[in-house]
Amino acid sequence: MVHQPRSEGTGEGPRDSGRDGTRESPQAVPAVPADLAPASWPALLAPRLAYFAGVARHEHVTRAAQDMGVPQSTLSRAMVRLEQDLGIALFARKGRTVSLTPAGRAFLTSVEGALAEVERAAESVRADADPASGKVAFGFLHTMGSETVPGLIRAFRADHPRVRFQLVQNYGEAMIERLRAGDLDLCLTSPVPDAPDLVARRVDVQRLRLVVPDDHRLAGRRRVRLAEAAEESFVTLEPGYGLRRITDDLCAEAGFKPRVAFEGEEAETLRGLVAAGLGVALLPPPAVARPGVVELAVTAPRAVREIGLAWLDGHPDTPPVAAFKRFLLSRRGQILPD
Image (cartoon, rainbow, N blue to C red; front, side):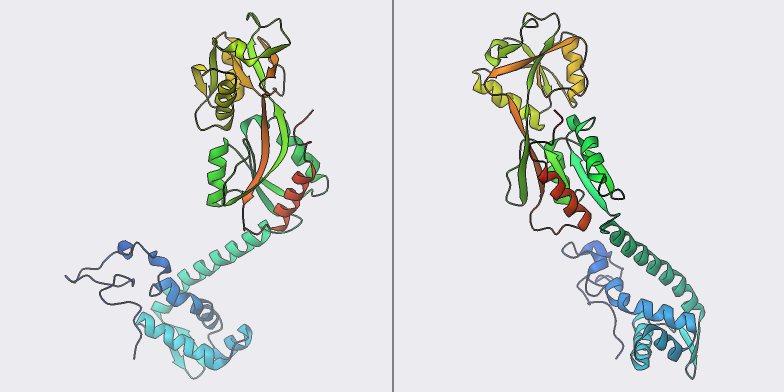
């Protein structure tokens, strides 16, 4: 009996037809992607494609079996079943010698391309996991991009000079989503996330400063209580950013809700708005001092943000990711530059 790779009336196979005789799209079954469904062509044919390419290359079943290290009978049966499933002859046979039919030649071109893609994919993931030269997908906050992260990577590569990095700068919630999507291996973020599917470790604490224009009434001070800025206009990061949440919480602790005049996406842009006299801001220290602003220590409440290293719980690390994770955890309290 010839096997047909379909399930009549279910929409599961690549050649299914509806009741009116028209061909249904494989996407008609949302529960299982068409290319992975048990009756789909990829699931049905993939185990035999390398056998087919080997026989086509040798044009001899015995030599192909010896080259691939499989029993000749296994190879012969696989080719017969392949032709039965496709419903077309791929080989013209003469004893143990075979030659490709026109359909076989057309099929071989696509099969060789597909097998080459699989080979490239396998080599790529193996290369990314190589202990000496693998890849780490690492996310971090924008405020850590100019000084903190370059310094960390330079120190790590002193002992791991060939490890490669895919670097992603973003705000905290976006990086957590990219962790969950598998786009990132690790991320440095704030506040330290607390979620059942994540592991997070506090690795440093960073003091925040009240940044005011250099002609502001508080500019001559070195320290300030946050409540003294209750009547000021604030420039802040947009909702969803960790620093915005920290700002709102600190202001609430100081007894007021900040009057937000401008919202942005990047700390140095906010400093520019402060320098222009458009408000005040709670920000981490800059990598380079900016003219036009004065940065005041906040004495009450304690104005800090905790920096956490986060990763997905239960996901195995490749050797380079494991090495970089150990490195970062070993530098607790020393992640941020002095």
